[in-house]
Image (cartoon, rainbow over all chains, first blue to last red; front, side):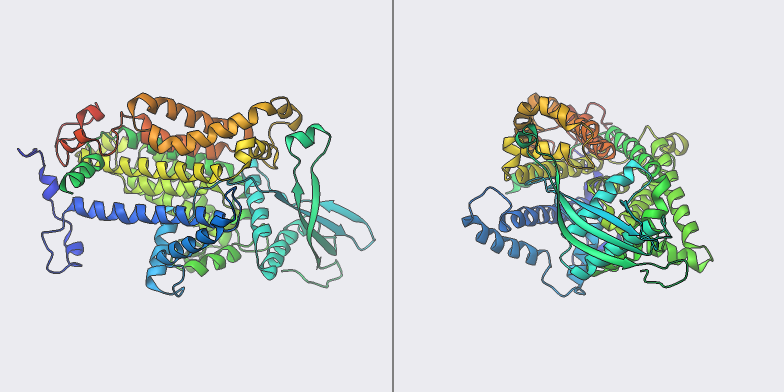
Length: 232
Length: 324
């Protein structure tokens, strides 16, 4: 039943004992609504801070059309927001851990700038399969379904964006191994990683087509039918 | 200050029926089911840790552990399965089966809460373990399932409410959860739109062209697209305006339906022209659940204060039961 002042009994319903126990001396003050409000503010503060951090990072790195003048300020602001999010704490620090776990659980660990500020070039990975008889074949990484195809594109983006050379090599080697399983006779796979330069609409009209730019190449040796191995 | 707080409470805790939860549940059920089926043939290939996989799950999980070791992952389930003698393949297939079942349960509204928790956990675990292959759709699925799991379930259109005949939750609590989703969407579009506005490509049509011709989103042949290339700058600017204007124009009655229609059309177009049907579906589901079920009040408007903490804004939602 509603009360005469427009509030209801639920407004004064106290939070569970386990929660009030966390605030000794404040029993009876915390109400369920206040708890909701507190959670609401923490949740949205995190979302807002993460979105701001991502936007500032674009500006700081000079990806936007803003004058260079803004870059330094954006860099400073990004550092402040990242610090507030605990990014500069020790990885094992409880606050950093709590923020990291909660943001992952809620799906709010990253911003929402898809294809923004600009659409990046797409990465490509081509495999050159060498056989013992000197034959050379070419192949691409493949998946069975269209849904997984989009995931493969994300994987290539992640490989391309990786700053660590060692990690990039490990990732390429894993994908190369998945290709080798379909061609077990190949003894060496040269993995060529690059990106596709897309023409603008005007360039396309003039006849320019997509061209590939080389970035990295890795050679991986695989076991031949006689036995030598260099698999991941 | 007190008035401000009353207004805020009036806005956040306005009474709502469970219709929007039903839409969110059914939509996410459909999403989880479609997501699972779309990965049917590639599930173990994407999430395996052994040599049969595209990229080892162990690598993704090791990178994830740099953030925290407490984020759910499929590795936990595989270890658990190993304790009872299940192989990695069997455990992964079981996880897949459970995810698919939870999607179907959500769709029907049967065991809504356990299904929502299971779907959220399993999808999150798959997303975490396949971190190198995840994209926007996974992000929004986690958001949607996270909110659904915390929502007052079951809704009145579910099998649960027909079977168990439970008391309906406080309509203001239901309203609060809807507000959270609404405000989250406002932030998503605002920051997405802001980032686009900061890039020159969205003003001159170049980003539109690149989005539509970039592999694997090049569903429309470039030659065909070229015929309409004069429209691309307009479409790019339109997208910027729709996204950045979302937090403003989605609230007033006069513009809400127009804005909602524009956003839904934009996502449907993304699904059709870029082949991102799962991404399109999740965004449509979230928007419909958040804004299509009732007339929403403008945040912090004076008349909201009158209903603060109390009887609920009945004009906001014709279906809200007057049980408070």
